[in-house]
Length: 228
Image 1: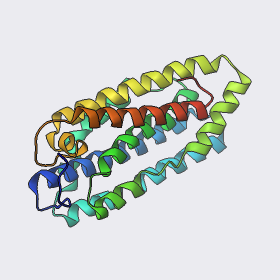
Image 2: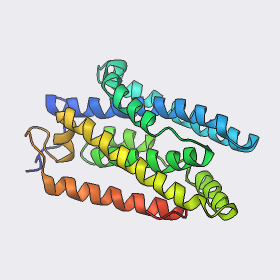
Image 3: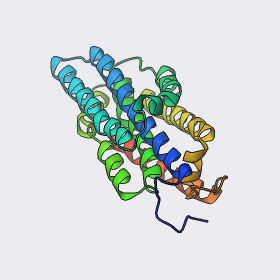
């Protein structure tokens, strides 16, 4: 029962979904900036510290177009972000890294899992909003993280087992928090099911979405040299 008309911000259900998604992404960028800045304190070298701080600045820069877009469509960006503050903060609290390598794996695996969910939502948006969101979801840190984690495993092979378990924990928490948000934001649930005006989830669509996200997670773990 996919909507047969193009998405339109004049539809209150669709508009609510767009505002929720932009708010979630916006606060996610704020949180990523804060966390990467904190993680830079665990960097073993000045080079690594500067690299992570550079990634943090990239995340912060991505907030501005989201804020502007919300204002353009006459929405308060801070009110839009506020409902997502607690679940995103909870995710980071539950997955606080214990050392440098855990912070790298979380930055690569955890952040990209969340981005995968946002990409899935964005598939159902109008072209302008979809383009804006996709521009904020680039994977900026893959080369840096993969190189550092693989080098660490080469130096200490025992690290691989611990980080593999850490990656699984991150995925579990990311799935739990994302499901929690979707369950409490009806417009987002309907959007990802392709139903912006009909309540209820298409379970087949949701299953396909989770299959795609899980496959990408497996591929990222493999890139790090870790078992899923």
